[in-house]
Amino acid sequence: MKTAVILVNWNGWQDTIECLTSLFAAQLPDTAIIVCDNGSTDGSLQHLRAWIEQTGQPHDFRAFSPSEPMTPPSCLTFLDTGANLGFSGGNNAGIELALAWGWEFIWLLNNDTTIEPDALTEMLSVFSDHPEIGVLGSLIRPMSDRGAIACAGGWYNPMTGQAADYTEIQSDRRPHEVPFVSGCSLLVRRTAIEKAGRMPEQYFLYCEDVDWCIRLKRAGYPSFVQPTSIVYHKESNSLGKLSRNKLYYTSRSSLLLVRSLFPHYLPLAIAFAMLRLLKRAIAGEFDQIRPMLAGFGDALQAKPHLRKPHF
Image 1 (cartoon, one colour):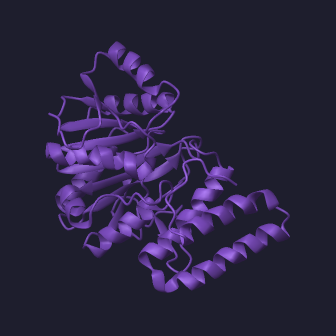
Image 2: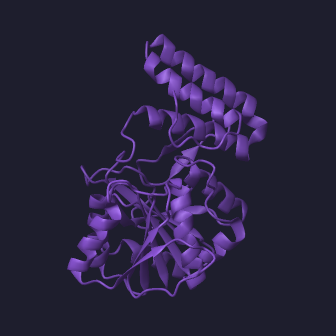
């Protein structure tokens, strides 16, 4: 079952090397790996080139050009997108190549993860046994506490745009349906992508996986989690646990989700957003109000994402 594994790297070459090492150790059959570098400024591509040449793994370095499909390599392609396209944009660059190459399945995997050797094969076996399933996620465990559960799919509130992860599993071995699958580890059939479209890029960060799973379900492909597919994740690496940028993007994306998919709930979502701001003010967390207010405002004005938000 031909599968393309897509990693997005942004100033995180050490994590990417750790993830690739994990993937190589799993000896995945009929698999191509695409690393999409999102305009890194830390010399990621140079570091990755030096590392991969030492390993002796077959590889190729390319500049992204969707108008010129490339012959699929035997193992690994590093794709320079030329700019920070966000989580969705970076993944979509890889998806374009995977679809052009004719891969049947596409596995989006965070670059700050490692996998159990059978993580992919466990999901592919579900697809083989259940052709009606089009979207499947792994059980995500924190790398710092491998016995805990960080994400077993998640839920969202269409009236507020708020989303959260499930931290308990419904069964030990059987796939179970969830409202959405985390983009940390998401396997999807190409037929589902061809019907529902690519991952939405208007979010830049956060909620894009929620939006995509909603669109996929509307196209006839609900989301499932396979508990026997285990992925370990270093959480909150890109923006920090409570940075101003994270507050901006989470605030913007939650309201944008409602505006994009549940517009009839938008007045209620705005009221909820104002309540969140009031709670921060009562708690004296005034430094957090400005990025949240900027995010809410940009969502309502349908402004493009701000790659360098000004608060």
